[in-house]
Image 1 (cartoon, one colour):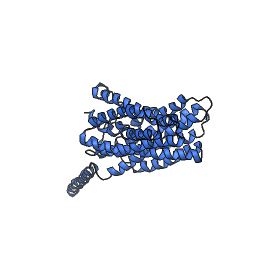
Image 2: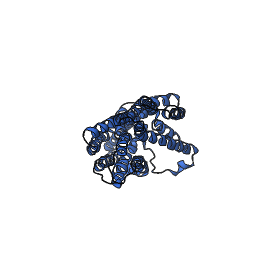
Image 3: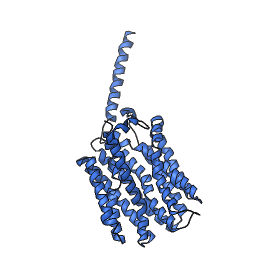
Image 4: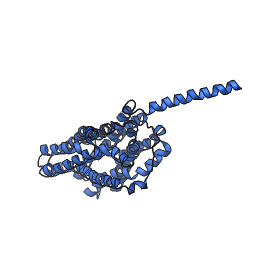
Length: 355
């Protein structure tokens, strides 16, 4: 009996030592499996905000063709707004579900919703159907897929967090380039309906691979997860961040959805109008990793403030006087490089406001 008691503490000590070693391995930052998560989040951005960015191509097509009886330009613009609105409004629910179910199941539900949204939009014959499919369902899919991925990189990176966020945020630019060019070609050579269906199917397959690879560290870090933390409402810096975010996102949406139509108003071809959006997304793909590097070097707030000012000046100095394809492309590339700077700096700034 005495021998058994003597052996048990030793076994427990070995077990505790193994757990301590495992815990140490799990808490390694800026290396290892974290870069696999960067790749997975990069794909998530491609298939969420990248696809949403390509809506400008569909919007330009809708505005030039009377596809739905009684539909107005405002109706088609509202569909794109629903993508962003639905994606952000489901955030409290998604945060709660992540706490209950984990990261991957809500993301899988989002991937299914996003694919169903595009496929069902291809059969829409009325405005309200387009609202529910390409607007709400796609937006909900984006929210359920993207929001669980937001804290992942903060759990894997410390010193290189802004760089990691910048790389993954570039996925929205890459996705915008790929899906805007693909949508334009598919609409021209196949049909609008099959363009939507193929987009939904491809996005689902890519998201499924990303969801399999993504891995959180909630069990090791045990981060606080609140669907809606009312304590943050009493911090003035949180209100400043929210006000800046609203202005930044308003400008981003305006550029994403209006530039192709603006190009068409200059009597450019439909293909040239789509290329303008492509250059904007290309600028985003290149600019956002650089924003991450600059944020790590000079500070997130300073970089965000400076780039927001530059983007505003470019709107007055280049966009308003633009009268040809070349000038419009120059503006699209420059603004795209600094467009949505909020996404590259949001994580560290938001985390800092909690302490």
